[in-house]
Image 1 (cartoon, one colour):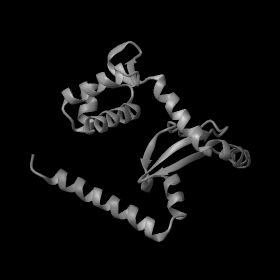
Image 2 (image 1 turned 90 degrees about the vertical axis):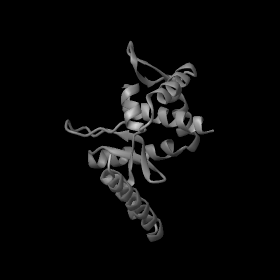
Image 3 (image 1 turned 120 degrees about the horizontal axis):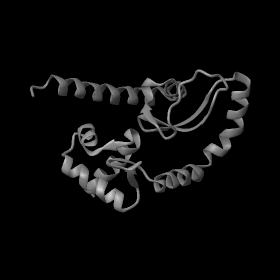
Image 4 (image 1 turned 90 degrees about the horizontal axis):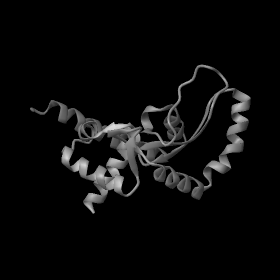
Length: 171
């Protein structure tokens, strides 16, 4: 099952970085190029990714992945329930309104209604970000129990400590 986990990680990373080549993926994932290439070939044969706009060496998600995402979103009914409220909020504020869900330590952007103003910052739907570094994530944290917030900060602090230790380790 380890190979399935690796292939899913490659799929998620292609989604985040698309269009992306095998070298960039391998570097990003800290995996051997040969392992990443095997996962890419498997995902391509299964119809989950495709060559980007005629570029044989760069990959992007295929429509199959989008279909799966739409099914997952409609399964929960969250988007449909939230849209009327989001529309009202956008009308009243004239600002962009985001709908995001918490997925462990990250938020996932599910829907966005654009501001009518010309200047704005646009995050891709399905994009992920650590809960501690976004305004949406901080709004979610404000509604959580003290114990849940403490758990999230403890995990983030542990990850930061590991990153510092790895950076300080001799090459």
